[in-house]
Length: 151
Image (cartoon, rainbow, N blue to C red):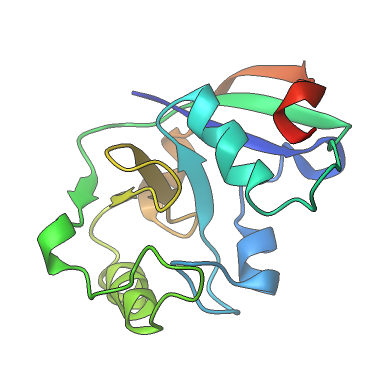
């Protein structure tokens, strides 16, 4: 299965989850390494833009296509998420889902709903999972954000 990761060119090849470990995210606590990927290039674009200042068009980005084994996947059902999981300030209890997944270390991937696009999904990768060695970057291209997206 292919997933997509859009990142600053300086660290695009880093699949260790360091960025999420240092900054935290919707799904993970600071200190927990997780690689955020998306089910499509369009969703990966929106997931970056939602965190960008208005009228700022990010540059020097790369779009990675990452091949992951789909037989090590756990899904988080929408009906098991707390109210407000997709809000601007989600409840921290959703991060506990990730902590359990990481500690259990049974699945390489965790499929979670996108808070940006209802009905679409992100795939979190546990870089410490034994099968992380099976992750393969199959494409790594410069990415240009269309400036019309932020005018």
